[in-house]
Length: 370
Image (cartoon, rainbow, N blue to C red; front, side):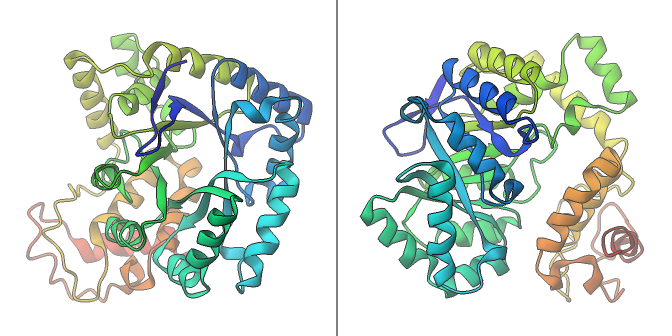
């Protein structure tokens, strides 16, 4: 296993982290066996959350860490913002997590799936003061957050406190400009934060390429998972790449890739391959938006490029991606969604691609607001 720097901390993390969300929860024995085998191969970062199986996932991780395995890894879990109604819920949820995980402390504790609204809610209820107290008590070693909103919100959250040691973002070669994106990755890394990558394969969708993209992979004789993970490991700002694995074959393949490429760089030729693959994916997009931002600011506050990016990815990857696109769309503040468009067409005069933006936003609204 290759290891990488974890931000400003004096600790080396395995290039591949085990994202536990997709563990086979109905087969606990298999799930425990998979986790322990991965740990035996050098994986030292396990990512779970209260919301995964509503506690069932944390229980499985806790079982896997018996018999000395706890000493070999760092555990990351998350507090669900949507479950928090008042400040007393912080301790109630956290104490339950300690019990399910069968531990006395959490190595890496995250505020889960932050958006502007969720962040303001948790902050108002005193989450930072509570977390600082837990850190002082030794119950939480390091505080971080996972994120699903736009770049400006990401930067605002990072700048809000010096308690952050790490963050977790969705990032892959088809999400360079989505949510925190590449700019957010660099922003966090410059602040000394470790950056944990989730959805490196877009929930598995990048290993199920459409025909035009699949033809390129066959031509260059590469497997999609290989280039997707290597594209991330090529970037020094990335600390660890999480993979949500639900079968032994996936664990074996990904660990083999991490062992071979976890600290390697892509060649010029390989980078050209990825650009060609990205271009092929874009042929499936139905709205020819380049994300240049010339249409902004919208008088109503609509984030036009973000709406189009979410819509296009839903078109490319079909029904399997639609749920995630909708989730991110509805995590945007209400004024930023396509719903807020009044068809004033001020944006259309500024669009270099000559897109009928108001009509296209109506398509976004129809797809995501149903």
